[in-house]
Image (tube, rainbow, N blue to C red):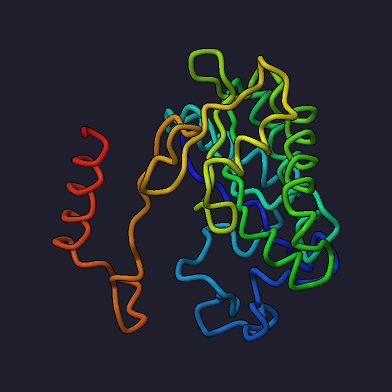
Length: 237
């Protein structure tokens, strides 16, 4: 399974450049002497800055995955709300899954609960409504994702990752959030670095780029190895 970001919006396809290509700094309409556009990316796409809802791009990405022997995708998911670019990202997630399904690939979600704090800060929801709002989000997931035969399952439970947790940090929060789901859709829940016990099934590792220092975007091999050894030891314990 590979982690996938669905949030790219391009001017040629959608009429304007999305934030993830510009980050309020770069202008993709500026082209350098190598023919590359100025984009907010460490790497330059072989096909240039693309749109994540473009059918040609989606077919291309999925075929590359299929040829590479990848089993499926885990999409970084911000929920369906019409706040910031969350709805746009969700639209692109749904579009991607149409293509992974056709290719016989599995798919799953990595839910970003940091969105709750962002929505509170933006007066989209109140802190007191955070749990109920997350419950509605999970009901959306159940209806639109968990019930799909292509959704990744572990021991017959839908696999749901969480990039954190960053807002709901207590086990009891997630028990409440998942309580609205059907018994057959109680997720196999994986959080970053550490298992959230007992609601969590396990954890996943994520390279600690914060240790790279100085904005170099390069993590020394020794530090990466130390992190991975520590993660494996925690998993083994």
